[in-house]
Length: 307
Image 1 (tube, one colour):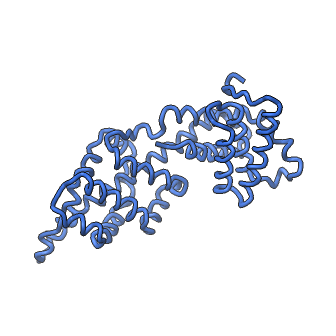
Image 2 (cartoon, rainbow, N blue to C red; image 1 turned 135 degrees about the vertical axis):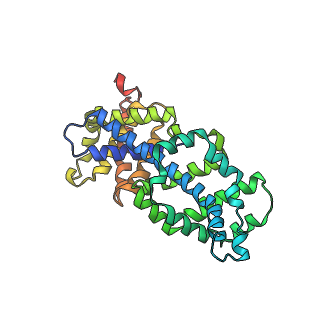
Image 3 (spheres, helix red, strand yellow; image 1 turned 45 degrees about the vertical axis):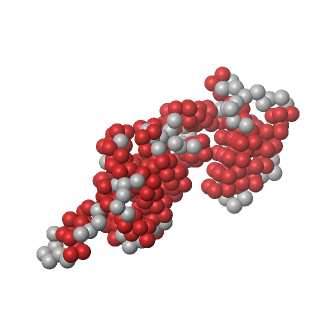
């Protein structure tokens, strides 16, 4: 499922998109955040859909070649083992996948040429040839070939990555998460729920952190502003300010998250999403605020709604 780090990124994106608005309404922010989660689900559904279409193309290729005007003996005997992969059909028959695929309609994306192109490349690989050479349906090789196709073939293919970038603007942010989600799904197909890629506890965390960042903005800024005396406020990256506000919210209102975890998370996010010096800057400010809160005996985390 989606991790807290992924959630923090999507909250950051939500807050950044609201930055230019004078009246930042919590309801609007929550709708934007939900849209980000929906986009992640749509991307996940498409990756599963594309994987299944690629595997099933073995049968399409067989029919295409056998229907030639003068098919060769090889055309008449194309190996279609991959299209009958047992794990593949468990995926296709899973209820939550079917329901979300019906809702998200991944088939509407222009994918046919890409599926054919990748299949033609796939069938020349050693792993594919080794798979079809074995006349068995053991669970392990059935799973391993799909893992190979997804992790080592699809995601390693520059054309496929460009294809994803054209369709899904969130691919760059979600790529690592998607690899983990699909790999986890292939290992425990039946336990995966596509209707709930954000678990209830993480969904609650997301709503509360976003709401706190908006409704307690002035509270967090009262702690941040004194630390900016030696900095030109106009030159501080907008994302750095957002990360610091989110970090202070976690200090004050999220009792299950250790301050050290909070600081490390926002250092990493600042390094990845903001400027080259942002990690060091965010680290210094959050660390100083944390020390002040401890010294003033103010690290009594309470739910922001009760503060």
